Amino acid sequence: QGRLVESGGGLVQAGGSLSLSCAASRRIFSNYIMAWFRQAPGKEREFVAAIRWRFGNTYYADSVKGRFTISRDNAKNSVYLQMNSLKPEDTAVYYCATDPDGTYYYTDRTEYDYWGQGTQVTVSS
Image 1 (cartoon, rainbow, N blue to C red):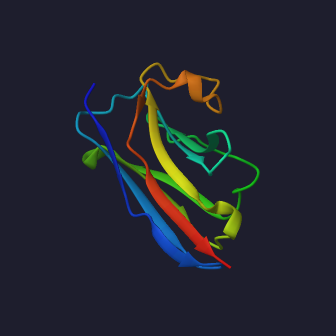
Image 2 (spheres, rainbow, N blue to C red):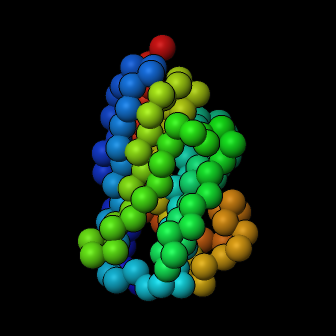
């Protein structure tokens, strides 16, 4: 299935913005769902956002709704996460993930078969 490679993390002040990218080394097919999860120190990995490849349906965790936007570029086999109005509690390692079967349980990390290596996002207060 290839690899997922995240990029774009970094350090930003509260209220600032960051954009994350996730590139798949192989073609993403229409039945796939792509997602972003995050994991803060001492906490479980949690769902952030997801997008269905075929129609672009998007889903968000309540904690990021209205601040984060997930999008895709079919030609580049890439998914993005635009993060605005960042808060210190958004600090975490952010992971890109995919389920080729397009799970309906998109908030459940165990439904995803392939993961990137993660990228650190740090929001200072």
